[in-house]
Length: 114
Image (cartoon, rainbow, N blue to C red; front, side, top):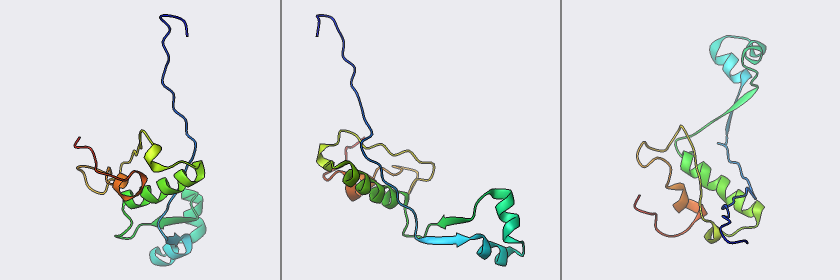
């Protein structure tokens, strides 16, 4: 590198993971409960089925499961991560939101105080 040149830090997405609640609610179930036709629901929403979280399905527990899958897919050890980013509009609780998912899977050890 020539004198005075700056290098920019880089980042890469090398793995991804997903996790969804177990319970599936179909349009047939909704139609039976509401008295409307399931095709009516499909035409208006474009949705055939949806996942419904149980009280045990917290944002942090689903995020932790997805994080473990992402690490496996990427072939990366959690200790090698510099940053775990979680963005949600549905935190486990308002403060400190879902930062606890780090403790559940992705990176062992104490959480930072901030």
